[in-house]
Amino acid sequence: MQIDGGCHCGNITYEAIIGPDHVFLCHCTDCQVISGAPYRSIVRTSEKDFTLKSGTLKTYIKTAESGNLREQNFCPACGSHIYATSV
Image 1 (cartoon, rainbow, N blue to C red):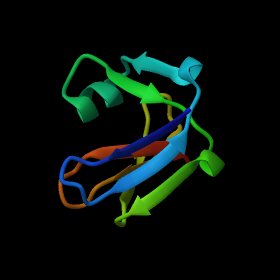
Image 2: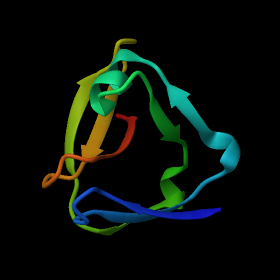
Image 3: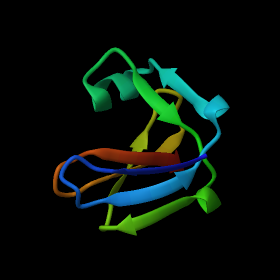
């Protein structure tokens, strides 16, 4: 199914094709810190199925608890997390 989304301030908008079986909750420490909650909802999609429609994302590389490097992408204006991916 196609979804449309964006950040809190409206600077970033995107669309993606997702499958309902690719939605889950993550309880890792990084997700708890990013969300400010005990878990964060995650929706997996492929790079080819994600389109950034407006705005420019801010990116930083984070070393996850596992030791893997993760690219974090968020709105530079309001700080809303948009997506993460492997480096």
